[in-house]
Image (tube, rainbow, N blue to C red; front, top):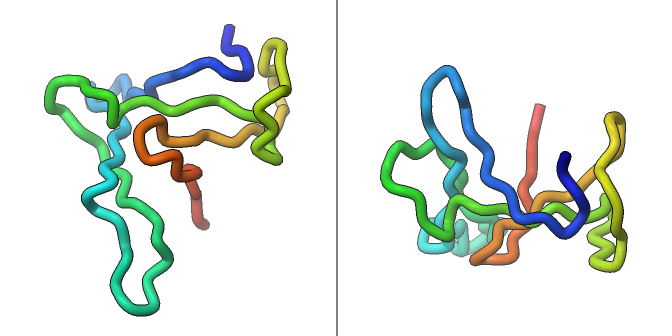
Length: 87
């Protein structure tokens, strides 16, 4: 089970890789979004592999178990950047 406030690591079991984000790769150039680059990583684990589970609105006081169908926000632990997805 995963609860709000938990710190998690995202793994691809088929490729044996972890989701990794690094604040050093932030898009801060003129007109950049300020977002950080996220990639799959096979190097040894470090703090850049961890994400904090929050409520959809970033609510840090939300507690309890994350249920199927809940909308959540994942926040990169070291940079505090929100994880984004795009179609």
